[in-house]
Length: 181
Ligand SMILES: CC(C)(COP(=O)(O)OP(=O)(O)OC[C@H]1O[C@@H](n2cnc3c(N)ncnc32)[C@H](O)[C@@H]1OP(=O)(O)O)[C@@H](O)C(=O)NCCC(=O)NCCS
Image 1 (cartoon, rainbow, N blue to C red):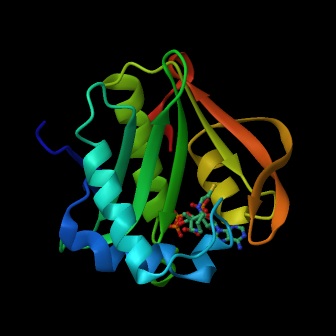
Image 2: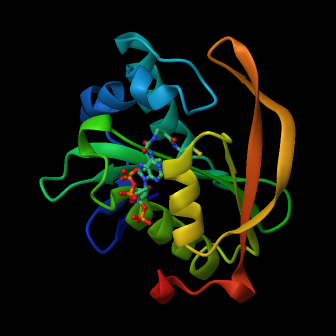
């Protein structure tokens, strides 16, 4: 299957490559980032394995995961955005940006771009994001994109040594209006 490249407004989403390992480790090996994710920080070998596993799963037919690098203008991986397909025309959304690159609108652009792809190309109907209750930056991203708050999932993930609730946000295809964000 040909690698995917999806241009956003300021970033590009693309399939991961082996040379993304260092960029991936700068994200998933950083406690500033992973304290908000559903997994603990990973060492370098685990980051390499993550990239290799992602590249392999991208080849599966049918494809059930779109785990894409967020690339900057220099084509360096500075974050990731992921749609994990679940059930019928539905997907779970995840995203992260390396801490040194926060505050430039990259997550908003990455999430907008992958949701747009999910609805327009993959023909999904529903996309959800489960966000830690204290994660104000991620809540801001979801709300800026017009995602709707649905409720609180109790003890939804076990991360950083403790159970954590999640706030569930969703976007539905008939409501989706990327131009508004
Ligand atoms: C959440 C995250 C992806 C945002 O990345 P980013 O590229 O800095 O996001 P953006 O610049 O597109 O937007 C951030 C928004 O959060 C707001 N924000 C940032 N820090 C904030 C804070 N502490 N409190 C409230 N709002 C905050 C910004 O003002 C901005 O909102 P605006 O566009 O309405 O002004 C990034 O912080 C991150 O990687 N965090 C760790 C991983 C994570 O939480 N992933 C999501 C899991 S659900």
